[in-house]
Image (cartoon, each protein chain N blue to C red):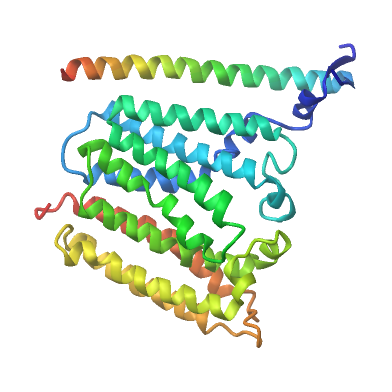
Length: 311
Length: 47
């Protein structure tokens, strides 16, 4: 094969822009959580939805979340490039041109909202549009670089899928999806602050005012515990208020107790005078991992509870 | 327009990646046709 000449802009592909890069731009790990919580809401919502429509609704939620992730990577490409955890993201690493990432994100965002509106209803489509705008506009562009409370408010963006799923089935909202929203909203800070305790050097390098960087690690440890306590209190409300039964309530209580014990271990971790861990952040790492399992099992219990005679 | 010279190996890699992207786009487009067809059938059957 002979030598050929291509535009400079396209030459980047030669060094690695693959199909996988385009998929990674959608933050597939985040999508897993979003689809899961959205699917649980579709399942527990009263009423019937045709499986084809339900599958399309989930696809729209996934693509909408992916679009928000792509727009986040487009806007944050400068700080992603200096953080070890994110330096290999496709735009930050230079494998996808920023303007292509932007166009990709906008196209998928608009397409997912329009398709959800066509397949289900305008309420669900509107909530999806709000969630994308919230994640990109409020969290990524406004709060992330300005306040250590970025995760608290930004966490709301990831909490929208239950509202979207419920609205897709019923055309409105109710107490249960609002509580599901509140649970994910309150789960996000201890989840991310546990991570930030052992990834704070990355955030410091990128000048992102994550809580351990802005307020110190000791303060962050206490915030993990406080938010976990509030989360656990809210997580049992569906049972207390009668919108879920004991199949949800009992596991929610046990999982909550476990989460609180983990958070206490984070506070009591052996540390120096600045709060830096002397155990390589073993409790924070364990809490981060458990927080993922916690949400998975909590929402799983809610799905199983739906099968109970009290539903 | 600024251009860069590619070696034969880079040219082959470029063609391979173009082919991969084109195939992915084909899958997406066919998937969308199937999805809109299925959605239309479901919506019509529910009326």
